[in-house]
Length: 231
Image (cartoon, rainbow, N blue to C red; front, side, top):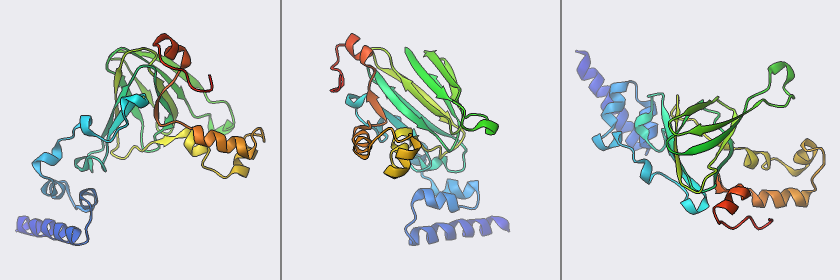
């Protein structure tokens, strides 16, 4: 008695969603049950290729490929997400945060340096954050709590890889310097104690690098790579 009714509901939801041109992710979010979501997915929708995910080239220092509900709709309702990163020689995954969830980070090969700034206690929110530095070797892991600022550096001349898993399909990513320098100049000037002029602020904005870049001049010298222009 109930199975035909469930099938009618699933078909109706699918027809309505298709009629108003909803994306597959949007249709899955609106589906009333797990079985309704499964009915919307083809067999090939359950496979994700990190090697073909949106990414920057190794020439910029590395690349990131992220499996989220947007890039891999089958994750909707599953409560998981994942990113695979490649750091080229002297690669730098610049300071960022994930407001959507905590990150469980594992190095797959070689050594990666990580930096984590924890939130200060609520009774003293202006305190200097506690900073935790780690040298993460192959198959070692660390945790970056939700909302914390963190970054990773490849200090070697070889390519390094890592996997980051999340307990959400929508972990997000906010680049800290892009966020800071996106606020109005006068507010930014006051926040920085009027140590920068508007022209200096604009100059910094234009030089903020991509999320994954080649960095650390000492490493670049060792690896025979050119230094940044200002050096």
